[in-house]
Image 1 (cartoon, rainbow, N blue to C red):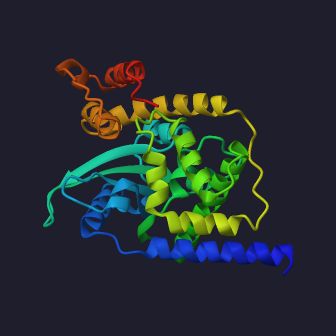
Image 2 (image 1 turned 30 degrees about the horizontal axis):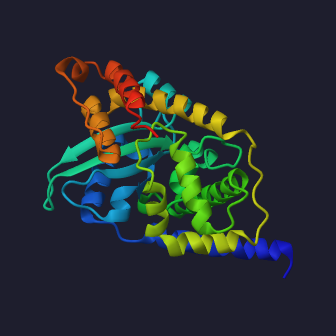
Length: 302
């Protein structure tokens, strides 16, 4: 079999795998949350994706559902020019929704990014892993406007997987197996964010879908890895943390109860409890700065 035939065959199998993942049924509360989020932003939304811990572990009334809403353009979903500019410069914008349902209280955190930026951020030339590291993991497609959008998402997730694998091979040349590469990559991507994850979290994510990640590794070993920037890990981490601080500042305004959400997120992932007084609750941007400094000192951000 020629090299081009091998390459086409590998990507075709990966695309089939992704279509199956995207088509998997989602819990009814997730569907309810997706419909509510779409209704807020109108016909400019072209797809809704479901990802994260709730997708891995299943929904419960205590879950916070993670969604991504893909927009045709920012003008179609954001009224204010400042909101549009913030999303274009430092995507995504993050919002919160909460509503009763027959299954219990539905709470969701949803991010908005344009379809064009979603695709663009999966490329291997993008050093910051915020997008491609998330979408190299299993994702559900709650809704898509049409088949063209669905196939664009498949192609973007496939590119995210190839970018993640190539980055792992570049950063960890001594690692030889998917079992070594994927957890090392996930841990490295956490280090580029203000993520308060426990050290074992990266391996847990790999083990939850081990057969999937092993199969991806087996397939991608047949291809030449995509070329990725060879910037040092410390530079990646610094750039990523700066972007995370900017996203944190934005979320403090777009996320209802943003200060309390940030404190909850930190405690959930690190076990470090953060008490917020009334003043910080009323001033979310200041709360974001104070929380970041406090947790850095307590080493909750690893």
